[in-house]
Image 1 (cartoon, rainbow, N blue to C red):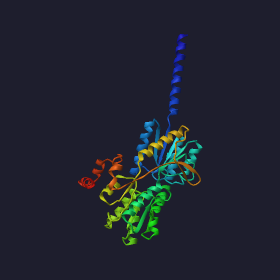
Image 2 (cartoon, helix red, strand yellow):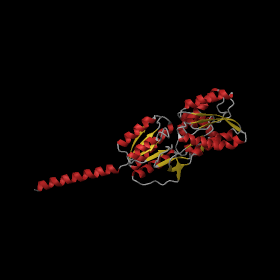
Image 3 (cartoon, helix red, strand yellow):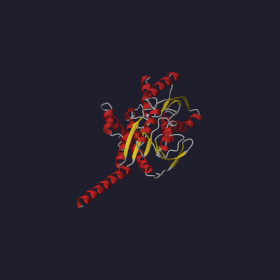
Image 4 (cartoon, rainbow, N blue to C red):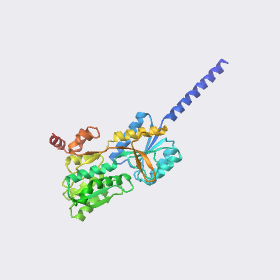
Length: 350
């Protein structure tokens, strides 16, 4: 009798322990992070930061990158939803087509955070990004200050990316007065199908040929485009003469700023962006609405939004921004430069 009681009690304790383990596992939030691409330095940083914040909060995260393939991104979303993720964070490749991801998540009762790029015509639970119109204003204003007259060439991202449209809007708002007064002319605008350097290079070569090398300035939407444009300018002996903007504070872009071939980049502190995205995702998974400060129309819906402020980075504030924040270390930048370049640059700043 006593043996039977002991066995029964042991089984009871085992069942109790297993139920506790199951409940603990159920309490762990599983986040699916769908990326458009993992190839660019910018997105590699985001993935690491989001992974780190999820680890800090004790959340499980699965990261997938579609590398610009819309069908694959939807397939990956369905795989994660079938695996039981509690929330999706999505960097859409195509702002319109990504609505299918939101629809799939809705059928499973899973909230979606639209990360850095807005998913159009969908009731996403949250959009978190930077003020992308302001990004465009910063780019164009810096270039206009360096080249107050002449022919301007604009290099934009894909029209399917809502951010690209916002960058262009901000750029043209900043340039409007100069256009209206005849000081500058927007003589060309290249819309690239992907965010890659080669398209920007080819577009700039064509623009230089068309204008007989008479381009006064180039407003490039990101550092990849800036690199392609500057390569083309270099071949025409115009690098460092024609000011070029950028975005993302990629290491090659920072190097070009030091060398004077790129006038500026837009720095978007990714740490706060990733942290707030993961915090919001965990809150949504628990049925809590995160605190937001804005709302953004995405076509058919107006969605809650968190918009952070971008920062213009030039030679004069490189140390006070990307270096002081640890986005790039001084040693990292020094290694990317030729011997003596860093010392020459820092001596000029004293």
